[in-house]
Length: 155
Image (cartoon, rainbow, N blue to C red; front, side, top):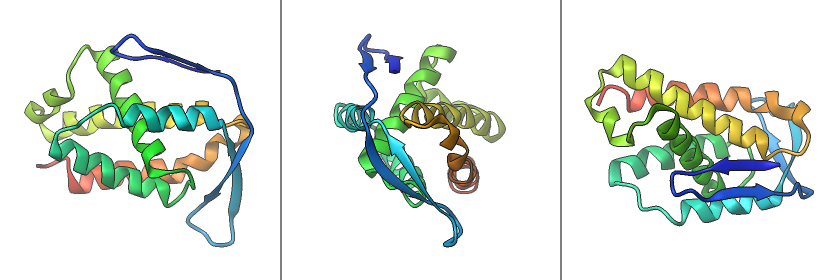
């Protein structure tokens, strides 16, 4: 089950569906098929369409989603929705707003954004049908963290 309570109080409770997507890793020799819950993917796409992030936030989300989509063949819109869910979970856990990141020093900003990325990875893992495939996300998540640190943390 893919369940998450959001700031708005909405709850996603979706049954697992069987829809196959392909994950392509860094190596061309390694091609993994990952089956995602189609309803969870659709819910993430719809969730992202309900928000209007600030321009800088949108730019960061877009670039991070593009990195993940190079490894996981689900829509960038769904990935953006998963990123948004990761941010919202962080906001609930930390009782903070995303805009609080602006006032943090880079070291703390990196730490907090890594927590959001870990939350996003958790949502991606919840959306897969075969939990044994969760390790397939590790490389793309490491790359997302590295790109955030290099491109955005020191702004």
